[in-house]
Length: 402
Image 1 (cartoon, rainbow, N blue to C red):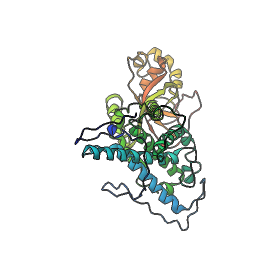
Image 2: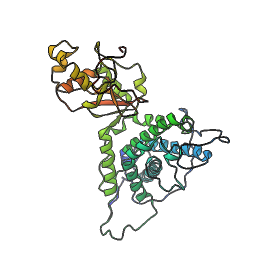
Image 3: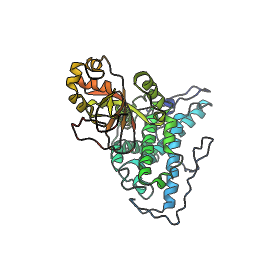
Image 4: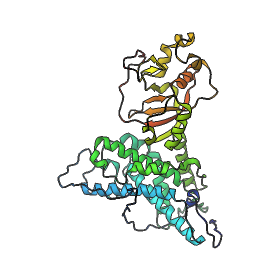
């Protein structure tokens, strides 16, 4: 017999985001009203556009622009609502009221997460009813949709199982189905709202007018979520196979490159880097994770005053100046030759081609290379565009110093 979590009678308390993720087993769908509410921060309003003379190119399907405009706002509303459920801090009422609200919010979050997953994944699901990223650009999100496909498909599968009509289940199952337990709503919200924001930024480079249809701005929705550092607490792994596997998949993805608030990255920069950015770093979407030292390039044309080739691999720089480092005539030679007990995270920019450039922390990278350390921790943010790279092995300075 399935056991349900019991709440104390007449309890009056708040539910945290993780408590909120305690989900119902089977559920039903309700009608959805897409009416984003405008607040003082400007979040939630219908995008307006004149489409009577608009022609569409670079699209997977020939849909009326009016439908795409409406769809963009609806998708942005989905992301805002998904983030809003995670950000809820105070749900009060009787035990019955809290349980009802809890289950309704979990269902709401899953509905919104599934809609965003349908949109972002590489596979087109039920194209008659679901908008897909290719409807806005057939080419802009191709590689990224494949990257997020495993997560998006897992969200679709798990959410659909519990958002379906009441069912007796698979006749082949002889054991009672376990309760889904806590859904990884925080992890789902972080992964999907970030990916949705990335999509709109990629779309903006190809079709700036279409990117403007997505309102409220997905990057702002993600920023309001990540500034609270929601990943500081991990969702427990559910005993339900499908929900548990989804949680593990999401956490593995986030462990590899964990999104962090910009305040954390800036605090680290102030404590460990030679310089702090002029302010633009605060507005970047940062992640933290391990990067391969051999892939790191310099973002500068000098190393503490010594000319080097801008955007060259730091491994090439090290090879070119090894004799000077041995002799102690290269800047920070002693520091480079000293094996560090720990290497503080470096600040790295990644461009649209996936190349990694050290914005600050070159000396730490050179020391890591000297001692054949394979990976270092890095705070990473995206810088638009693709940079022209010097020939492999090039180390002569050809640009002015930063």
